[in-house]
Length: 78
Figure 1: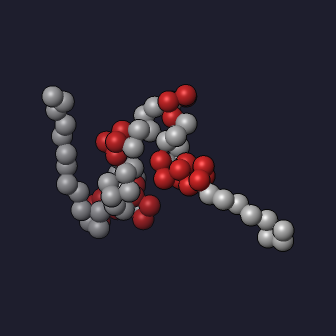
Figure 2: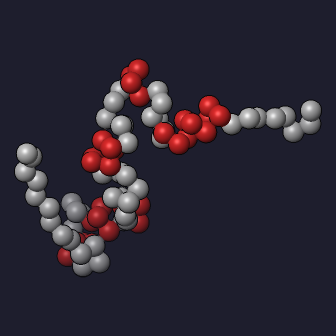
Figure 3: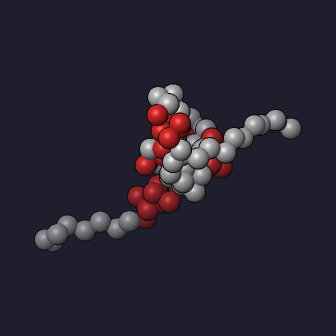
C-alpha cells in the first residue's frame, strides 16, 4: 500500500495564522474540504483525475451533467 502521513493542525492557533506558508489552512474556503470532495482522494472518487474523452460525463460533476442532459427548457413566452 501507499504510506501517507497526516498531521492535525489547529487552524485557530496564532502560530498557524501568522505563518505565511501555512496560513492557507485557516482561510474560510478551505473549511470542510473533505466533505465537499475537494481532496485528492475525493477527486479520484468523483473521477476527476480523468482527462479528455473519459471525462465528458464527469465535469463539472456527475449530477450537473445529468441535469444538463435531462432538463427540459422552455421559453418564457411561448
